[in-house]
Length: 472
Image 1 (cartoon, one colour):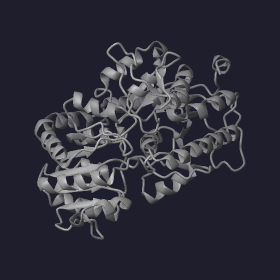
Image 2 (cartoon, one colour; image 1 turned 60 degrees about the horizontal axis):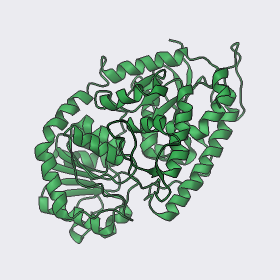
Image 3 (tube, one colour; image 1 turned 30 degrees about the vertical axis):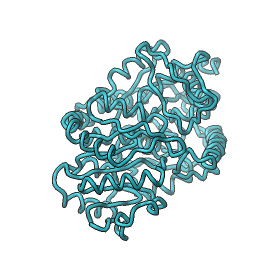
Image 4 (tube, one colour; image 1 turned 90 degrees about the horizontal axis):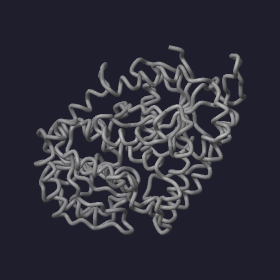
């Protein structure tokens, strides 16, 4: 296999960074790989102690894109945070465009261009996050870089993109940062209105780019989304675009002191007894909702681990205020600002996961074979929750939404949902977990699709076609 140099460019949110970085680590067994993301994130990747090498010892080259991003993983419903995100988006676009215009590349005839200040050699292929389509695609065409799209979320997003157009229903009042995405109807029509900004900055750019991409990479386990992926692949504009399902892309982390605290606590619990609560890095629950989650956990009298931002500890009742290690007063619970989620969800002591149903969390829950109490907050999380419910691995609690307009869920309903998830959905979750764990075995379907992808990368031409350029 001809070893190429692949540049992976990530959108600078950890829900996007983590799966693409994991793909980069798998690809570097076969190709040289540089992973580029906002420099504000490269330092955080180091502090999170993320592994940057493959199982075979090959190293991913980490490159920080110089921009002015000051991203905070905080509630996107807050007006100030929305303004910050929009400013960051403009900065990201400018910085990526500047990088791609000076990127060294392999010229026809085998000669190589060099760029002072760029610490890596010529790039053969670019893999970039779908959320950056508007930013990366024009320069790829301009400079002749072949590219492959990476979708970090479920199969509904690219399908919604390729089916979008002037006919798409929009609502100018919808906030694209907080609105819950909806599925199409049985005929494949999207009958619920979407935010204008989502259509203009995400869906239409992906629709435009897709026919000229050398493929679409999905962070998906094909058997889990078989129906949805089949619908996507049979869409008219997708019939010549190969789709590679290479999920679940779940990282392995270097052990830290926090890992030891969590591991020791899990080891002291009986099988399937512990409740794990986590809502991701973006959502922020209301004070009264935090108090009722605590009340529900107390009433259930089961051990728990709760991932909660430190700034929200002030809303916890007195007996839930964690000590310096993270233990609650009765030592029955562990409350931490960050938790090693993959470790927790793979442990036999965990019997239920209360989750916002982000796509990474959804895949991690299924890989661990854990039933989920589904509590979607925004974006694609409702679709992910519905997917779990359809497969009898999750119990829908509430499409609560974020704190500005979300439904308050009392402790009694939370308790009821946790009991129901453990009683009615654990068996099917376990079965799916057994399937997910075959994905990356030697003959696993995701492993096989990765090998096809790596071969495709070796074959891709070093220049974009004239047809691509004329379609710009």
